[in-house]
Image 1 (cartoon, rainbow, N blue to C red):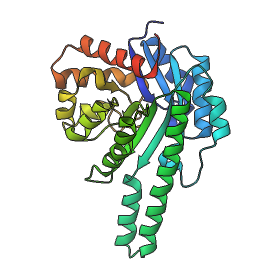
Image 2: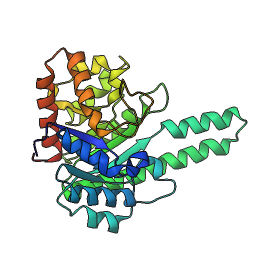
Image 3: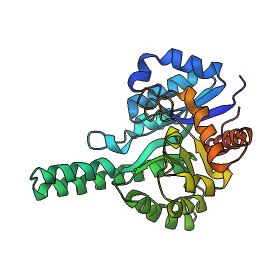
Image 4: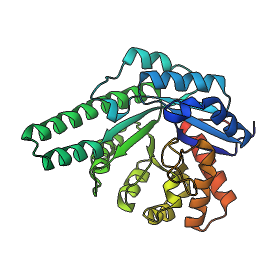
Length: 283
């Protein structure tokens, strides 16, 4: 198969795409689009691996999403079995998510919530960090990059700054943490710090309808950029508000080409090469 694009972060194993999974995957193949199917818990990680095993143009990540940590734990025995499959290319999506936690605290406080609300938020953040650290250690032990979900609270860079404060000193000491910052919405200063420690940043179809990230995309070294859809969420124009599909990833490449004023074919080839390098994929 001639792969021209790799959607480095999609979820045909979740949501509405799961109901039309085979047609979604077939459409990707028709269009020359490979994909990394991302797990968010043990069940979806196992399905990601199964899909990757059945389809030559798919690969898998395995991990526990931070928003699932209040109800779930990192089931080491299950993941330790899954990681041995040759098409598992990363650990994640793992990380921290302050957006929902702080949003819930804000809403409950406005409704007259008690100080217990803030205490519960503190405990949830603490658990997110504990489980992220488990997965970071697991990634190191197996020589895999991480697919990091890192979402700051509204109007802030807090989660990114906390993640950098965790990663930078460890990498400086020689720990070989590596990977990609999925669905990156950070500012240029934050982005430059991630690039400096070897972490790429990936962008979605939101580039097709907002200019909020143009400065960062323009300034990025081309070898530190990747493209994703996060399908079925965050559909690009002209499909905004509808179901998103991995087959829309060329629209993200087109947006980066426009923003950087670089030939689309040059951008396409570069981000394809970046995905192969970071996730050790051969196409």
